[in-house]
Length: 113
Length: 112
Image (cartoon, rainbow over all chains, first blue to last red; front, side, top):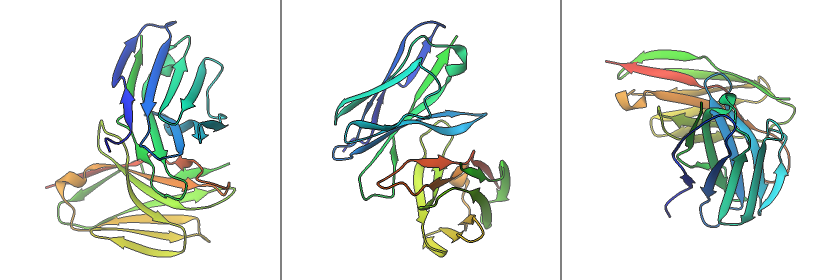
């Protein structure tokens, strides 16, 4: 398996633009987590899905952020409109029901100018 | 809520032993995890403790005391490649495989 795949790896955009981050989980993993990492706040959970259903989105900063998981092979995290304070590394991680190990994707480094 | 504390930075010498401490306060507990993260890379799983005691895995060991809300990661025979951030994380008690709450990490520098 190729592991968790995220795209793009780097994104530079201007304030006000829409940003879409993508994640392909490891096949068979039924939990998917979106995290954001900054120097100030560390690694924080934004939202997670179980069997494609959003379970907890209390970490989503505000209405500008939305996430979807239309099928078991794909998830998106969208920011619209983007702001400079959204600049961070966004990680997708997946795991199985009875696993204690979360597998992280390589992350998307987002810079909003 | 949950709060996880760990030192921001540590420095140790190649070949030595280093202990990275983590204390936590949580409304529930269902496991303590350690992850390693090299600069510019994703976190990778190191260890998991849910019962009190020491778990050993090669050069790395992790200890848990649930009554004290305390864990440590012990790294033996340090190598230069061990220079990385080490993240302590706690899982709550919700059913199913719930998310982790991470500390801000301890940046370890191994020097010659």
